Length: 289
Ligand code: SF4
Image (cartoon, rainbow, N blue to C red; front, side, top):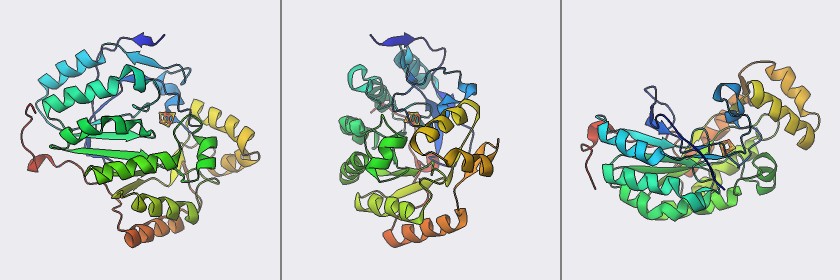
């Protein structure tokens, strides 16, 4: 049985300017996420989620969305999936994301989807409709090595599937690209990995990569991550402790060299290092499609 919770509000305003995806609003239709990435920041205490895998649906989310969109005076990009993946497996049956997209399409707002799942392909028709205003679909790629991804993102579809989905979006004329974030220190912070992500994104027809060379580490997130390091990568906890201590941000090794390799590869393969965001000044007013 699907666990349900009631939300007070749905859309949160994002502090401007939002540097990554040009978001104006953000929303979470679920609470929790079964993709189980070992580095997930949603485990941090400030979010109050004791068990990330115990997923709940915000039962009144679609009513709230309709009501809140009706009252919005400023049109801006709505982001899905900051605290969970809006295409995690439960979405296949409850279709909260699909139904939210239907509402957004009617109100004519732009959308950015960030996901690790090729289930997003199911909603290609709706995203094409929304793309009359603006739609972008970004896939998180921290590695393109399926075997490594299975360790660090154990419940998520493999990167090869994400890239195949990216290719279909690109072929359908929808902006698509990658979010290369986090880049896990001592695990994914190699020039080879960074270059492979750029090369495979380009091969899939992706047009941009938004990158962050390192990871966050905070209270319960750090505790969980270190426990998983002990299990999967024995000996790495000590290296992290030495480099990061109690700090919130833990940088990748050789950040400058990695950044140079990333920029060089993006130039070589024609990949933008910033995503093409929705530009309100060039846009029409919100309208019903
Ligand atoms: S997909 Fe995102 S929200 Fe879900 S576990 Fe992974 S990092 Fe966390």
